[in-house]
Image (cartoon, rainbow, N blue to C red; front, side, top):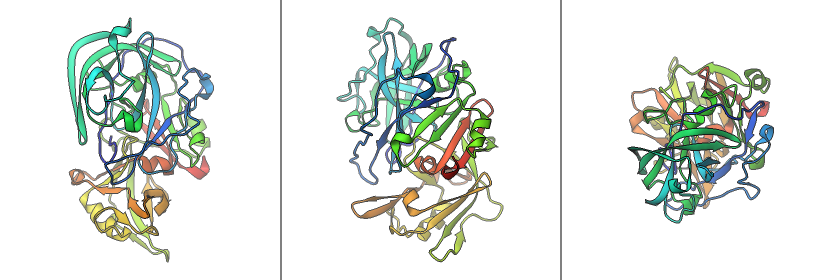
Length: 387
């Protein structure tokens, strides 16, 4: 997971019991967080119609996901403790764990933050006596490991393990209005008893089938995260399912077999050799797309990127073959405008060299309807115009 320009993220939770079960798909409304490219200063943008209320009817839980803007991250409100203390946490398909800042914590994520976990105010809090440290490109957190009642909408998991941060310097609540991160990857978590609270909702059969779909439209009020839809219902929307075997151990991926740049005359210049295959990790916590040196050095000149990320605002289209399907993105799909300049979302990341891997961030979810099947380890994608 990356946040801002780069910023891995985490979160921690798991253990459960039989509670209220969702008998029909749950459509969760999410708050959008928009960051500004190539700048240390970022503006927090949210939909004015967003409501923090969690007691919404089960069959139609909606929070708007972000529209098509640079640096969109998605957050949802969760509860921890008895009575529940509420937190707006960023969703991150690139990590497994849940953490929230704790009372008296220090660091930029704690300053001027009213959403601080206070175990003394919860009758169900339990301190495991263990600590954990998580490092990221843009900062780090130190946590104490707690268990407490976890609430997601009207679903509830007692004794869920998570990290209560004592120091956290990743993102500012004052700027973004969010506290902590909830991982959505396939892993069980980094702590000994399992800390992936989101996956616990599926493992404990509180939501079944174990599917999560990102439906992001140009109108944030119509965008949503849909949990528990069946394969057949999703296939009616045009979703094509593929095994997720060619991926990182805990991640979700698509297979990339072609990347071509299309000029104004329709001529294509393809930058993947015939027969090449790349795995592309799908990461809602990333605000950029990461490319290895081979792809970045070929793609950037074709887009008119001289090295600082600026590209012409009439840059050419890019066509990808993803799991055997062709998707074409215009410059409006993969770049953003700021102060009259256009900036690409494709960034060089040398650490990917030699792995035949690239990482897609929010650009992917903005342009392609995406479903994850946690139980069967599959990824489904579809063009938005078919959904």
